[in-house]
Image (cartoon, rainbow, N blue to C red; front, top):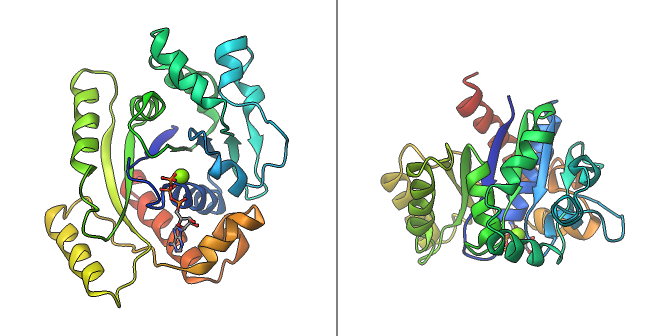
Length: 253
Ligand SMILES: Nc1ncnc2c1ncn2[C@@H]1O[C@H](COP(=O)(O)OP(=O)(O)OP(=O)(O)O)[C@@H](O)[C@H]1O
Ligand SMILES: [Mg+2]
């Protein structure tokens, strides 16, 4: 069964895209069939996935032109499939809302998602309609968080939104876990916030810490995930370990 996971946090630059891309590559490395969906008009996950096609099809084509959603699925050299994102998605965000077409993404996934073991959705740094689409389509949400003073601000709002959506029977979505990203444990504040997170959300915080690692930041400029670009780096190893922890958590193996 396709496990659909949204990667969300309305705070910018917390490692959503890095997590989406490297989790997709790590899960693909375990021979799972993975679909990554880039729902961010910034298109960062698309570039980082090595999609070289100029103006690739996005989820706009099936919406506005009634084309087959299969036509927007591309193959990343990193071993997973991807539905790319681009600036066009800004129009989709508005059109879904204005035309009352909520759950468009869920319908697309009902058509094309069945052949996948995992679908990972990268979302933009806002709680806009595209993010809501991801939260409604997902069965679980992963929240990347930087261990900083303000990191918890906004997360409660996100958790409430997920709860509201599932209370209204619009989805089965629940928060699957919080992922601590860009961790530098030499920094005392990071250590304190990290410990506080463990105390606050003992069953939600993933044990695997994603370290701040330059190889993860360099990889997108080589149009690759960190896992493919430098598999021996601390960052790549951490994402591979995170995928293992995720698999144990949701496949009960
Ligand atoms: N573990 C890490 N170590 C070092 N650099 C990292 C790490 N994770 C992410 N980065 C870098 O930090 C920046 C922000 O990361 P990323 O783009 O993944 O965040 P984001 O939450 O998707 O941002 P946005 O909200 O803009 O979509 C990027 O330049 C990325 O390369
Ligand atoms: Mg991003």
